[in-house]
Image (tube, rainbow, N blue to C red; front, side, top):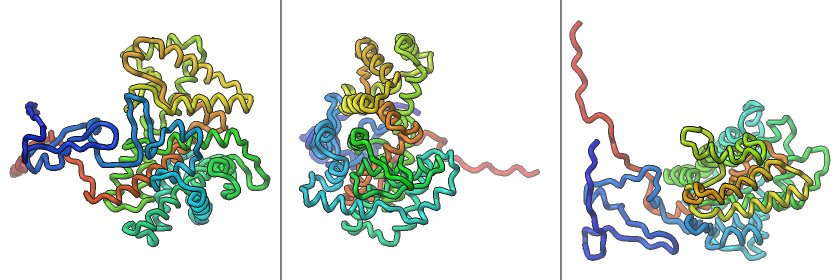
Length: 429
């Protein structure tokens, strides 16, 4: 494969030969290359889509250099402090914060649709008890298509919004059932007298034959986790949902595809990897050795939870998670040595020129695993919690995509295989 260099100057003075520059509300402008192939016979080559805007979106904005994350224009720190997950879900879906009447109606709709069809619960019995919760969630969420396919007309805005509400409502029930099935405990039904996070907790840890009083501090911490993970622009799983949705697939199939993408260790499984790393380090005294190993290119050891594909400054979610972790551990009287290791590791790393030069700051995954473990969740449930939160973002993007008109997504490729050749003549025996 040969490489040639094309010198192209894009300006407004080039008339018909110019490629328009599109300005967004915030962030970098984008060169519109939709006609590049038709007019110039060229494709844009961008592996991993590092410099490609795949769509227009008004939902979430990330400025990695400044450490900014906005949901519909609202800073994530302010939402985590003042809002609730259901209010944030409404914001993502509808574009504005709800007034009290709208919030009451939205919450009522969530309560109306948070039960699972009894036949869906039979699906769990088809999985091994030790199956990963994400594997079960992919199957169960995809199976919901069979229960609602005939009543979803995706060309109807009201039916699309109802499908979005169904997914937000049912996802905690689905995730909780993954956990209770894995430990052989009966599944508790949703309790509509509780808020979203507290209800999720009682389904995870409660038993059907006794009342459960949900710890308000733990419930608030879980609510913050859900808020922080609700959306994050065009990440791998969200892009997967949008790609599937562009074909006209139903929302349950699209979200099941998003869950599959989220399951990857480079995406939703990072907080589990952080915990395993902290366990491997073992004590604060071993941190200098761990940092030295992380700098060694020949050593497979890596410091997990540092750096981010987008954030080249601090991750604005990480401080909220750290504060919540400290609050919950103190409230529950838990002395987790992993938190001490994490805090010391962050302190040392952020003073090291190696990390400073590479802009490797702690991200949201660095402390979230410690917090989820303090709540009593096993590591294999961490990504399932992430999926519950991200469902609000996924359905918002699914709804937004249906307002576009560009049709099915169809990326091109730079072909590097064999050129055309003829099938060989068979030699007579």
